[in-house]
Image (cartoon, rainbow, N blue to C red; front, side, top):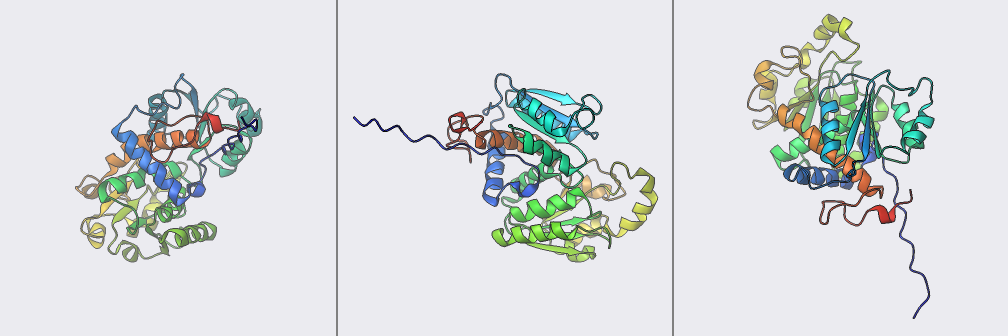
Length: 341
């Protein structure tokens, strides 16, 4: 009998989700497959059974993000711990690095809705559990997973579809639509006024990813060019948190990028309309559009729950911190036995 020991299982790599391109095209598809499976069987996956704790920090107000992460952690068998601004020492009396080290000994996943992307990066550098960007000034990647899930449900695919985003295109939503959209193989068109378009590094990153997937990028000031034949039409509020005093000026600035019946008439006849909400009817979108038959915004809102559950489970599985049920989409062959933690 051989006495040669069996080779050790390779250590799993700790995974975080801080920006849309943290998932490869194949991995993004795995997460979306898992989300569709979880939506069909809501309580099959229990990677946080125990219950283990998932901590969710909010530096900004929230409705959908708060409820979907809290419900999602509970659905996964865990206990959500919601932390509001000013309730901890995070970033004030205690460094982000030290906070990450402490939390990693107490919780199984760290979710943070914050301002600076650099804070999330520092948290991930020092954490030994997955860190999730629930929104930053630069990106909103969890929203895009929900949006892509919604596109899949209503269009049957993402690859090759044209997605047009109109309005304030210098914000986190436009950045994530570019990056996540091309990762999903879509042709992403971004339209906004001069001075309110995505920054060059984000566009370059999207173009690089598009070469892998067959997607494409168009950034323009011409709303009609972006809308022409689009399969998916998207907009976002013109007045984000902290911009309330600019309301009149921004109304005038973005008026030509409002999504109304005429705009939808320029898109494909079977185009769907997305909005991450909250929406301001009569500003960035007409009531007849968001409340009309082409609108799928409430499916989109619900899908925050399913997409984020899938993301958290996938990160735990891929990090070797939980075992996936047999036959789970995209999660086979990973579990605690491979962890290096």
